[in-house]
Image 1 (cartoon, rainbow, N blue to C red):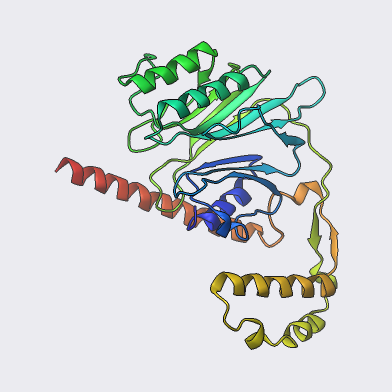
Image 2 (image 1 turned 120 degrees about the vertical axis):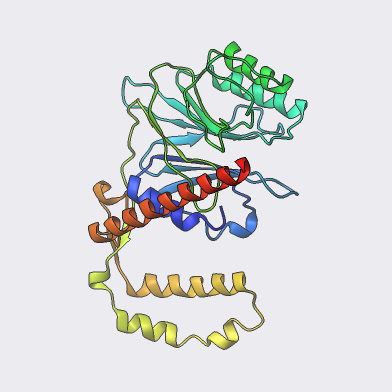
Length: 315
């Protein structure tokens, strides 16, 4: 995700998603300062002691939710779950994200199946992720390899439905959405890829009303800002000394700290209504139009690249 975070934030601004599940983030503690997103709570599960993998789940601040632990989270799986509070009479929904590495062993697979089985007992479950079983034919409910057949058994034994119908990576269906209610997930679409990734993004709708928390977000009120004082405060800082001998990340954290202190002193805040919490104040209609044009142009270029790669493989 390192080179795709800005594009992700743009997508989120355009679409206003409530949940964003990400697999293979490759994040570790060095990303703590850069991966937050305004208006969202971030849950992460980074790999410890090795590279690759890792998962993340962004949840809109306006949703009433809590992270869910099934008492098995010490087991060696990459999964996250939240309980989203439903409106009166609608019931709660469990939403989660999983990543199963292609070389995962039987012990970790069994742990994942136990977690899926426990989650499937909820009233409403939506589980998204990359399970790396390209040999499964979901139409025929069949698979070539033993591990894939075990995964199919888990899905069937827990009465789960798999709702994605199109390949999500180079002709293979790796990304899946599992649910325990037939009418819970709808409007499933593939939305292209982020950056140079060869995995398709999947967009879908959970067809159940979620309870919205009272928004407590605030926004900077630039109309009442004292920019003269702001420049003066930052100008009095001896930057050469403050940043001497510091690396790029430490320098950024020091600069960010001074910037936020000056901001708190010179720029007042105001309440931000729920109607405007889905996109930043600077994202106006003109900029949204340009972003959409650029995204369509990039999507066309990406499709051309994929077609060219397919052509080269057949020649």
